[in-house]
Image 1 (tube, rainbow, N blue to C red):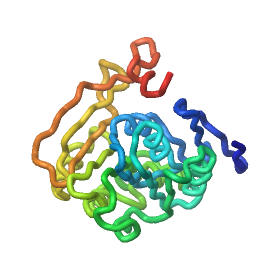
Image 2: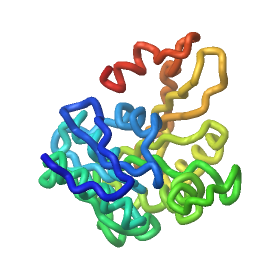
Image 3: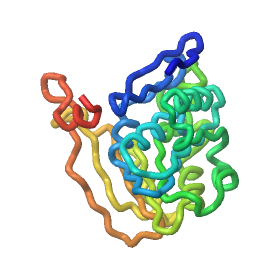
Length: 245
């Protein structure tokens, strides 16, 4: 299928089901965190899943490729990114399975309806306010910093949108874990599963994958660590399998 690419855009092979995604180096391109989250999350047959802050649509497309859900929706506030996501959906022939909605996460429940999804995924901005270096590129800055949406916004809206016993999946940074768990519990999204991601076996973790259950009982499982690189810099066997190589 031929896709009309705009200047500066490219098609990237997702290494699964022949899917490709439109990206632009001038905007935020998906990274390893999105790939890992798409494998950590589970969407069962007949379930509907929502990705909050979907960017160019990488998570809905990967989730559709890896799961048996009936419908996948991506919510994105930046229209240029949402447009790229819609064109990727058409390019992969997923119009009947994946929808992209332009809108603000802070108004997600009003836009999409309460108790309307079985699963929510999110790869949110990691940095608080001006923490870290501010990028002059607005699209990149919004993707990395809590400029337009914060953790409270995401959890508040997720608590409204999830069905009872619905599942919440997020990738974030370990340094914010105390805050994340406290706020998840405050919104009655009980942390149930966690996996730390380490760049090397002898380094500190730099990502964490989290699953929460709306209205769940207190009890969390800590899964074995995920190691990204061997000592020689090659991907580990598990990482290669997650990338389909």
